Amino acid sequence: MVEIFLKTLPFFALIALGYQACRSGFFTSEAAAYLTKFVFYFALSAMLFRFSANLSLSEIFDWWFVAAYLWGCFVVYLIATAVALVRRLPIAEAAVEAQCAVIGNTGFLGVPMLVVLLGEAAAGPVLMVLAIDLVVFSTLIVILVTGSREGQVTYRTIRNVGLGLLKNPMIVSISLGLIWSSTGWAVPGPMNEFLGILGAAATPGALFAIGASLADKSAERLSVAGWLSFCKLVLHPAAVAFAALWLFPVEPFAAAVMIAAASLPVAGNVFILAQHYGVAPQRVSASILVSTAISILTVSAVIAWVAGMGGISVGG
Image (tube, rainbow, N blue to C red; front, side):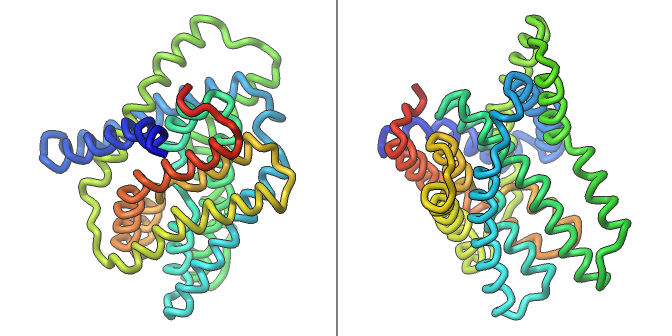
């Protein structure tokens, strides 16, 4: 456990560096926004395209994997929703809290960290988790929030969701990579080098950007943030582990990566959605801050467990 913690520590140290740089004023919020844009549209997109272009669809997509991950997610999603409704929160707020409980920072933290720690073979399962989060749950929250406000789900809502997915650079880069892979053509040497150099900026850039984004987050309503962090860091990986290891015949290594991905802290894009719709942004902000701080220990523990279970060499 200590050895795994020491291997994950540099990743969280980069997050802490970004946090301190922005918190101290050395790095402005405007600079952080541009860094995030660079990572999102260029560095991370290059990394995702390069991974998917060198993988076949069969290496990424597996029905049992999808079923196991969705089962684990929806169990926790329903628990978080039920607790919110018991507290007599409106549907929109319950949907946002449920989103916090199951959507981890897979794009900016999971892809760079898990591929480095668990090896490039982890790229396929991590990309599958990322795609499910973006396609299924980003769609679900928009439908629930807008549907609860308008009393119905309109064609405009569905159209906006579809356009949002088509414009998401992570979805676009993964899709284009898979299309390239399906042609059977190898990625040309210079292009592969270019993508490798640009994609290499994704890991430090994304982690620094996560920390910078946390600098303006507040830890208000700690009881709710603590509950949602518990859902995300404990209940979510536990439910996914139960589904992947006992309910569905998921390949062991893919199951290990899936569980590790499920252990990640609350994603920053949940805050973006909450702020956009004006639904509990401070609650989400606190959940991101608290879950990220605690995940320094919990993510290490989960990775150590799955690595020991699957005989995986971490960082080696």
